[in-house]
Image (cartoon, rainbow, N blue to C red):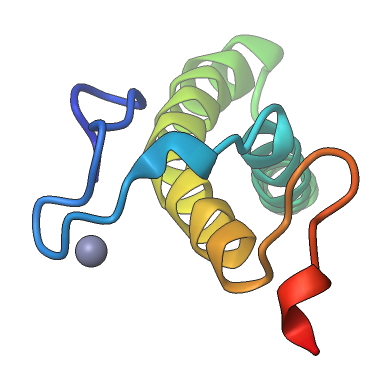
Length: 101
Ligand SMILES: [Zn+2]
């Protein structure tokens, strides 16, 4: 479904579903910040308590780990959120349900 790192194709390459409805906005980034932030801070605290390394060791480990995890998770979260948006017909404003009986 992706064309490039995060850009979407115009439509699904398998079933032809148009991705025009898809707008995950800031959602994926927020989930990634919570998930990766929680995980990395837990690991930082565990490392500090267990080994008490100097600060530059923390920086050397956690800056690349945080960047890698964030970039790695971003696509997955965006895909999941667009899937959920499609499943629940989520959109801005009022959804026309006049044909629902
Ligand atoms: Zn499809």
